[in-house]
Image (cartoon, rainbow, N blue to C red; front, side):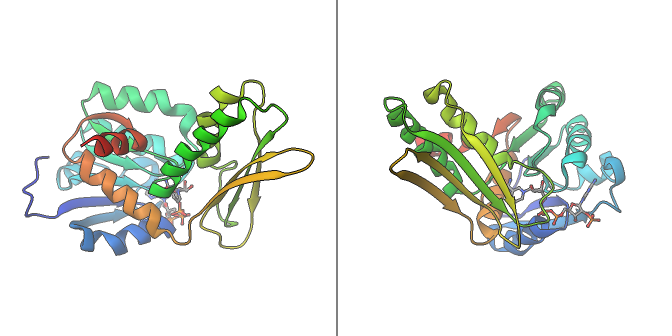
Length: 241
Ligand SMILES: NC(=O)c1ccc[n+]([C@@H]2O[C@H](COP(=O)([O-])OP(=O)(O)OC[C@H]3O[C@@H](n4cnc5c(N)ncnc54)[C@H](OP(=O)(O)O)[C@@H]3O)[C@@H](O)[C@H]2O)c1
């Protein structure tokens, strides 16, 4: 798993849909080589992830489906591999994934949203919620909008956003509304509303490149690390160096 800094990091892409293709496009210009790609057909139930296939790559990147991610994680973990998981909708199985990764001394970074802007949005949201703690008349709400092909709702990002602010707002849990329409890559709004006014924080991804960039940052980091990590931990560490 140790890379020569001159050599590109070899990626195995799980999923060749909207996100898999965005990563494939960006990776060569960021110092990665695509060593292989699996889809649902070539990797049913994780069957393509043999030890031989995994030995030939440095990092596996999973942008598949909620019902496929855990089996993929389990197989990569059992081989002691390194992995980035962008797939959402499997977080009820987070503990199982963590145990598998830690038991086999593998390495994994996950996030519902790999865009740097969204990680900054979380920071702004926490600060807004901290201020709002003093003003109970403001009612929090989250609206997330995604393309009509997205399978899970509410989005993992909206759920994470709610988690980020809940400790400041006590009983005022934000209502989350999901919109599925058209081709929107992903928009999240956090609002605070009173009878007379609305305060709104908004993040809108324009293209999937924002997610692909972050996933590749995570891939470069995890290539040399072990353990089970959320993407925000890495950004915190990088900000301190
Ligand atoms: N974390 C982030 O920043 C972020 C950003 C955007 C999206 N996402 C999430 O990423 C996931 C993928 O999104 P997308 O828009 O790229 O979806 P998509 O366009 O529907 O593509 C999904 C791909 O996964 C493949 N697949 C399904 N099961 C598989 C398996 N067992 N092994 C390998 N490949 C498998 C599908 O293959 P077939 O074509 O053969 O069906 C397809 O190529 C979703 O959960 C989405 O919510 C996360």
